[in-house]
Length: 187
Image (cartoon, rainbow, N blue to C red; front, side):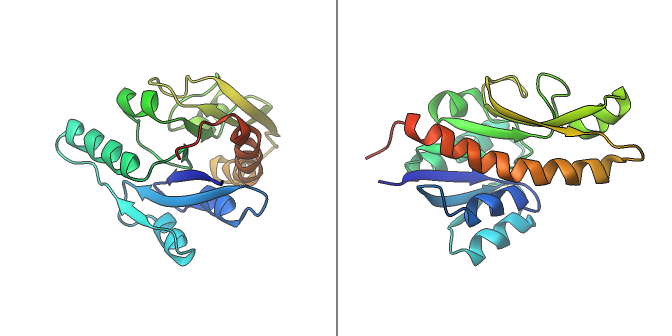
C-alpha cells in the first residue's frame, strides 16, 4: 500500500514537482497545501490532478494552526513533506504528523529563512542542503540526509540558490525513499 503524502509549499513548487514527477517512490500524494493563494506550487499540483488546499495566515495564529492540523487529519497522511513551505508549523502539528523539511544549507549552520544569503555573508566555501525531521524549533530537528554544494567565485544569492535547488530536488526524493519503510501507515 502506497504511503499517503501531503506536500506543503509556499512558492514556485520546484521541490514539490520533483516529488510529483518521481517514479521510484511508492507514494500517493493526497494533497498539496499552501499558505499562499498565488503559489505556483498550487498550479503544479492541479496539473497533476492533486487536490489542493489554501490555508492563508489569519489574524489568529491559533486559528491557522487548527486549520492546518484539521486538514491534514482529514487526509490521513502517513508523511508530510515541507517542500519550500515558509511557515513555522505548530508543535501540535509536528508532534502528531511525521514531517520532513528540505533546507538550503548544511544544518546546523544557517537555519532560518535566509540560509543562502547567510552562507554567502559568512564566506563559507561549501554549503549545501539538508533534509531533516521537523520538530518545534526552526530547522533544529534531527538531520536525515545532507549534500554539499560548493560556493563558486562570483556566486550571488540567486546563482548559489539555484545550484542548491538542483541538488535539493534529488535529495528530497532520495530521502523520502529512504524513510518510507520506517513509516507507520494509516490503514
